[in-house]
Length: 171
Image (cartoon, rainbow, N blue to C red):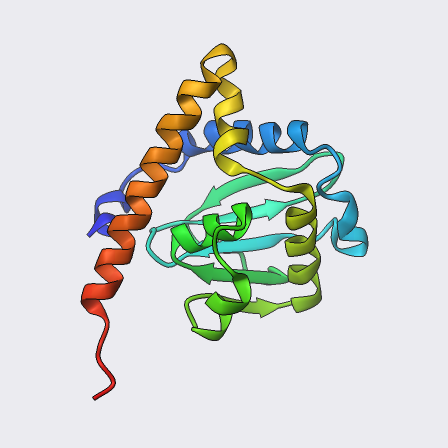
């Protein structure tokens, strides 16, 4: 339902918030992409299965970028797909990537070594996406953090309830 609702919306307005959040993450964790080594100049396709668009992360240490696209470009070396909340949970550590992968909630294609390097870089940096985003609001950061955390928790509850309702029993 939400996918159909968002389909006609232009992606341009997403670019500024995406850039700001990425800049905030990099500012709060300046060495986040150094651990990528040879993978630092690769592009990572992030494909939320519940949204009508995807993201391309280019973690170049000097000029990182995160761009919304209608579909991932051909030849992208890494594709990570799954529900948006699972992808966000991978960033902040609230979801176990191995568990998501083996339950098939997460699909990884392409250069798995690059994916592991990105995962290790994010884990080592201790990224807290809610706090890093809230930092954009300056003196209102504490209030923003509480509001963002509450909204994310509600989304996770709704997603969990929907998944539970759709689950089949084994017998």
